[in-house]
Length: 356
Image (cartoon, rainbow, N blue to C red; front, side, top):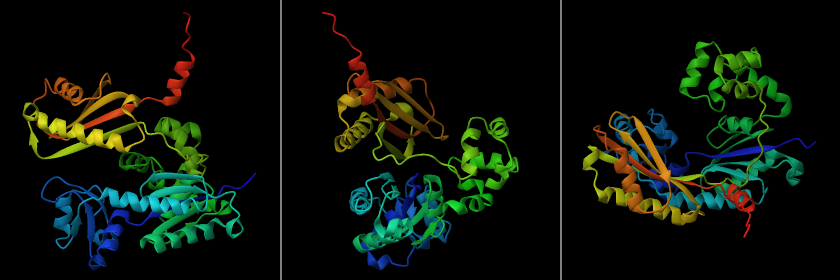
């Protein structure tokens, strides 16, 4: 059996790095990419100089500028980032066809069967990072391990512009002292619960049996048990099928439900239609239309209906039905669609017989 060799490539501060690359005068200065600080914009990403001030992604842009008055805050330029991402993916394809993009700035590569560098995934990762820098003038970090989970954890180990290797015989030792917050699915709430149970490291979790973990953590215990032992059998998924598509608008000020204009809703629909036109999906693939609303108290609600017709009118009607009894001010509205499963559609067609 061939030993799996997985590389996780993670670009360093991708959006901010591209902006600094294109604006050399920003080199060494705190830079962030995101929404306006004068409104309700949030930080998408920032460079390491900005992080020294406590700035991080998802932070309100207004807070970021208070923490760092000299921060250069730039608007998001997705077309530019997408172009760089496509060029980087072409580099990946020179080393393997087993590529699983996770976002514009990170991907898994399976190089298990590669003969390059006598099969050394470490040297392959090193060359990929060099090629990315030569091509795009931005840096990337890499994690190399026998599975996806460990490779992703490892890519964060020597950031920025570094790489870390976890070999099969190092897994047991590596996992013992690994903080549980590094595991997939362990966010603030789960992390707090595990900490309360005195399960702070993977070594602590290893001391518990699978039935014990399920009793403590519910179904997530089934996932937690193998992860704590460094086990992850997931394969590289080369083509992910898009299940949904959406757009959102966060308002500069809150609106009472009945004060939201048709122009705002129509604008959202046009933006969604444009995004749909740029995707691989068609209107005929749409299963449901979805309306999402975030209120001034940050509660979120969403509603959906079958897509009988993809139109602004359909979305507006769904929105107005949902807010009919609402009085709380609205801060965000989102329009989206869910897509049909084409395989399921084909199966349905095959099971439809013509008895005429």
